[in-house]
Amino acid sequence: MSKISKFFKGGGSAASKGRGGPSPQEALARLRETEEMLSKKQEYLETRIERELAVARQHGTKNKRAALQALKRKKRYEKQLNQIDGTLSTIEFQREALENSHTNTEVLKNMGYAAQAMKKVHENM
Image 1 (cartoon, helix red, strand yellow):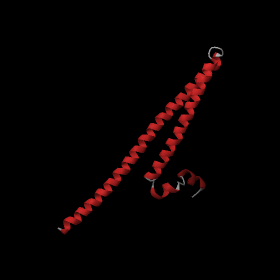
Image 2: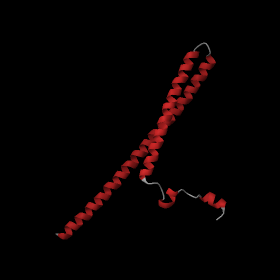
Image 3: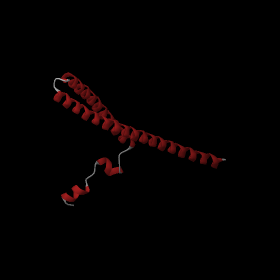
Image 4: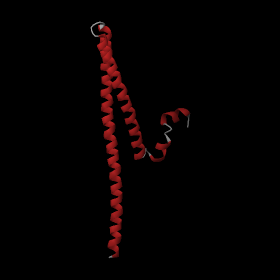
């Protein structure tokens, strides 16, 4: 196989080659890492918004151009913050759905074991 065809077909990672996808635990860990990273970025943007607001107040009516620029930057940071909020809520929803599906899978496994045990009990009767 040529290098170009390998490139376009994709080599795949070790996790995706063997099983076809990440395990629920791996996915949960990555979602939690992403949540933490986005939370840190949220805090950073909040401090930047406060700083730009302070700059706008400082310049006030004395230097309208600088005050307007600070308010524009503040508005841009607020847009980024809203996007992060939406992304965080989506990630939380995905994480909860994954946790619930993992729990349901465990419950179904245990119910299967219980059904097998009931069959054995009924066979012995």
